[in-house]
Length: 196
Image (cartoon, rainbow, N blue to C red; front, side):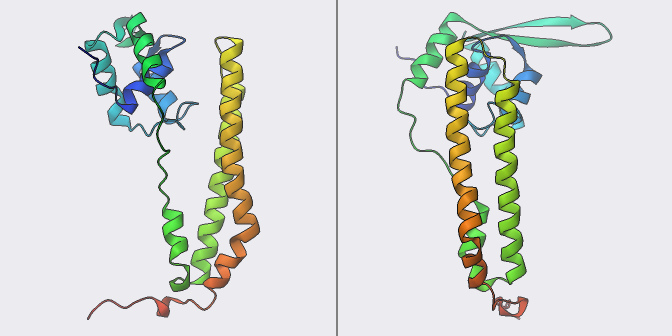
């Protein structure tokens, strides 16, 4: 009987565990703040249920470590079956990236918005992109690669991410003024009024 496909969050958990065992806290931190945060949109509440499903299906093991003066902590490790399942899952076509952007919604309404609103949206987006690029750089600098091939692949993925985000940032620097110009006549009064 073929194995049921893994959810994106379970795949992410297996990827984080691929080279080393980790606590649930460390997995959550890696998926939300660490180098794995760019791969899958994993919420705080989705990590622990995914780990429980992986343990139940035998793709990870879990053991409790007693800590002096603190609650016990659970430590997860990937199994041979888990490694095989991850490689099998990653061997499938990845499908399209999912991209959602409130900034693009705001920009599509630029003619109806005050100039200051559009300017602020562009500046916020540029700052956010610069922060993401810096975070990629920091993640690569802080990474503990398990081997040369892993380091090279991580560097390649980081370069791809920097290139994508850098292109967005360059576009805003080069063409942001044209979007602002579309909003120049916009004032709060130009917004549609609610029915009275």
